[in-house]
Image (cartoon, rainbow, N blue to C red; front, top):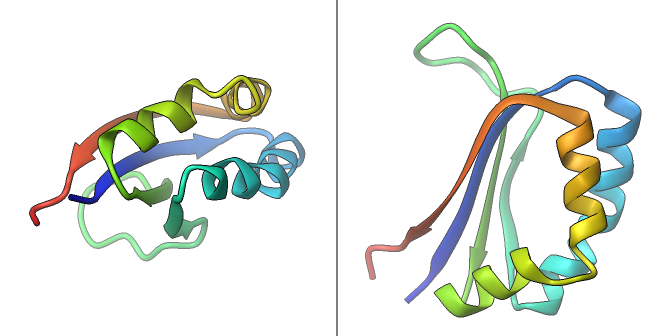
Length: 96
């Protein structure tokens, strides 16, 4: 069953976030993941905050959690934390 990493946040430092985006794809691919959504310019349908949204699909919960814990990802995660605010990230299972 597919498993997802879903993040929503405000980008506060464009340069640092760009460095994160340039590097993160390799770590995602290492675990069979695929970025389904990476939206910097989304259209707000409801609510009051137009944030960046990211959805990454992994083949399993184990692969998603292994990616997040990977030592190669940790410096990139620190970059994302430095570049964003007011966010949240969740792991979620797919329906099938």
